[in-house]
Every structure is written in C-alpha cells, then in structure tokens.
Amino acid sequence: MNTGMLWFDNDPKVDFFTKISRATDYYQKKYGQRPDLCYVHPSMKFEPPPKTTGIEVQTDQMVLPDHFWLGVKNLTV
Image (tube, rainbow, N blue to C red; front, side, top):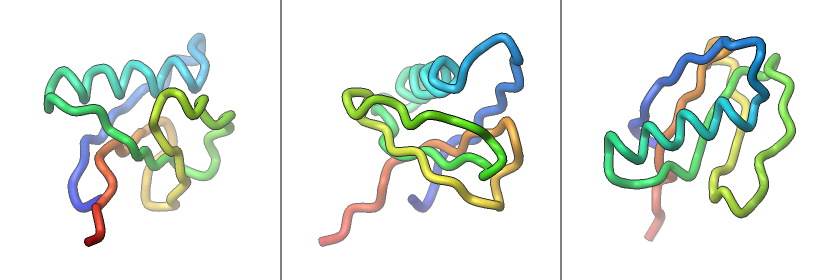
C-alpha cells in the first residue's frame, strides 16, 4: 500500500470489528472503493475480521495505538 487513509477511534465502548467497519465504510464513501488492507499498532488486541469483510489486518509499529491505516494493496504484475 503506497497511500491510504488514517482513521482514529478510541471509543472504549466499541469492539475492534465495529471500529474497523466504521473506518472502511467511511473510506468507501470518500474514495469510491473498499479498502482491503488495514494496519494497526501491535498493542491493539483484536480478532481478525471475518474473511467475508474482504479486509486484511496487519500490525505495524509505525501506526499509533487507536489508529487505523487503511488502503488498497499494491497489485504486482
């Protein structure tokens, strides 16, 4: 992923899946396409979203806690 959207959500009443759903819905409305990759800080405890959501979640130390870096995977030819 070369570019993406940074989303912040620190709502303690909401689970990880709901947070990522909010972020992906906003991304789709804003950019007209659904993201398929999301980076989060390794300290964020999460269950991977169901495969039916079409989004892969990976951890990266460079992403701050409670932030979601969403985008589309680079396609290799």
